[in-house]
Length: 95
Image 1 (tube, rainbow, N blue to C red):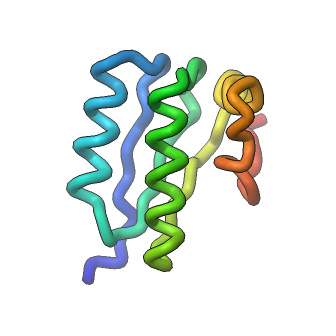
Image 2 (cartoon, rainbow, N blue to C red):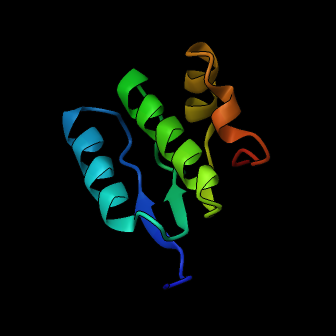
């Protein structure tokens, strides 16, 4: 198995294309460590947030690393508003 982190840069906002792009990436990256680059992502939206949460739980259940890198204030605030702040547990927000 390839242990290299599969990286995906989240777009600034969560629209249909963002959800489809992330879902396609996750399908290809299944079983490999994943790093979602979230520095430019400002507005998570419900569907994209739930997709990230489901993916994180799946990766953790399989014992594979799943990280959201550099979550900015917009992402953190959006997830809090949805009650999904646990998605970022153990990760630091971007300064």
